[in-house]
Amino acid sequence: GAVVSQHPSWVICKSGTSVKIECRSLDFQATTMFWYRQFPKQSLMLMATSNEGSKATYEQGVEKDKFLINHASLTLSTLTVTSAHPEDSSFYICSARTGGTDIQYFGAGTRLSVL
Amino acid sequence: KQEVTQIPAALSVPEGENLVLNCSFTDSAIYNLQWFRQDPGKGLTSLLLIQSSQREQTSGRLNASLDKSSGRSTLYIAASQPGDSATYLCAVTSLSGNKLVFGAGTILRVKS
Image (cartoon, rainbow over all chains, first blue to last red; front, top):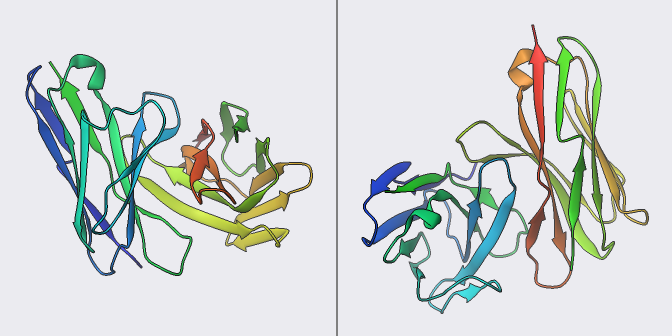
């Protein structure tokens, strides 16, 4: 089956620093990648949708200058949390979809803790 | 705006019981509905996907039904096992935007 790798699985950083999370599709070409955020005991909220080679489309209320998304290749998308603050602490999950299908394959998630 | 609700929020059952998880959505204009499993601190595993034209899907001990007109889906788990303990998430793909909208999930605990 299709595999999506997300790295790192857990990161702790100081307030004010930036953190980059990678999402890779290992055995298929991901024309579209999605980034979600999940607070404890809550559901996943879509942050943005990115298509390879174009700018990401952000959901309402998500700051695009704070959450930088790059989808430079068909197998890699990155999410950079810039100038992280404690309120950015959350579980971030990516998913990937290949063209011609509506199935999203999910990464294992990244737990971000900002001190 | 599509909203997905899951009931109950949490469920604890003894091993071997059959159980039903419920999902409802406000906008019936959906492309498909999916049930996912999420283990603590982990990503999502897709369990079943039902296209809008389908009524149900089955995989092993799992059966999911879809009543699009009433905005409801159920996930039936037969002969539950402790390994089934996890959070089960329901999500719909809207016709507009082709995005997944998730419910808050049902936390299932199967006691041995």
